[in-house]
Amino acid sequence: MTSAKRLYRFALAAALVAPAILSSCSDDEPDNKYEELNLDIDKAGLSFNTDDLWTGWNKNEPLKIGDFTLSHGWAGYAFGFTAAKITDTQNYPGSMPDHQFAVMPGGGSKGTGTPYVVGYWDTYQETAGGQVGYTCEITLNNPDGTSRPFYPQSIKVTNTCYTYYTMLEGNDFAKKFEEGDWLRLDVTARTASGGTERLSFYLADCKGPDKSKWFVTDWETFDLTKLGKVSNLVFQISSSDTGAFGINTPTYFAIDDLRTVVDK
Image (tube, rainbow, N blue to C red; front, side, top):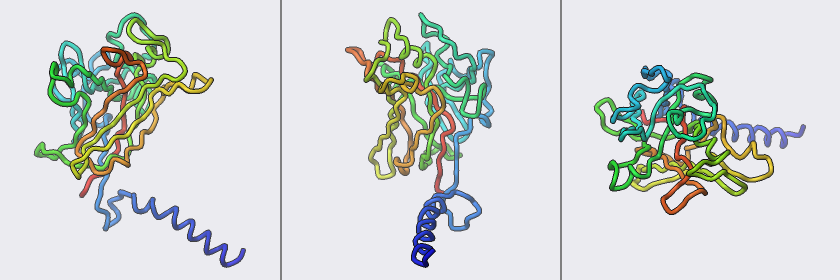
């Protein structure tokens, strides 16, 4: 091998390794300005009832997981974020009911029966007729309760059973998805400069002959790094099945394993 080729390969290797070093959040690096702070549902100490639902699911109070606050409300039904660890993934056609908090993987991203969080984006609650603010919002707080800016890195997302089976088969309110239909999860954040940034992830993208690839049924990673430094994350749903009264597809989605870094 010529010396020129050796020099090229060394330079290429250095270029590939450098970003990993710069993005590392290890406390062992004395010059590092950041530290990891992740949403760990397993270590949150949440209590669950016999239906494997968070015991606060029918109360009008936020869901607290470590230093993170997840919006949650109750208006005779739960909206916003609700924790669960349901393993039953069967379809229960004919009613939306009590099975709305089950997810297609049968548990969180750590395995069957592990906890996760279901979001229900309620458009009514984000209008004058409902509560003030966003129904599906995540913020990070300091010990004194003040907001703490953070840098979102990634989050795991998947479909709930209710939404998946509705798209797969349709019901009295929503259509069966066909070629060209889609369901999109949008994440909007307030940035440090006072503006907003938005990223999107398709929970359903009905393209091609292989229908088994149309819908997300396992935990998938949603990259959030392009949002930069933010003060919140707001989740909303868009769908190809939309009528005069809004989205017909159930606006449920599931999240787990939000990874962030923060300034030290």
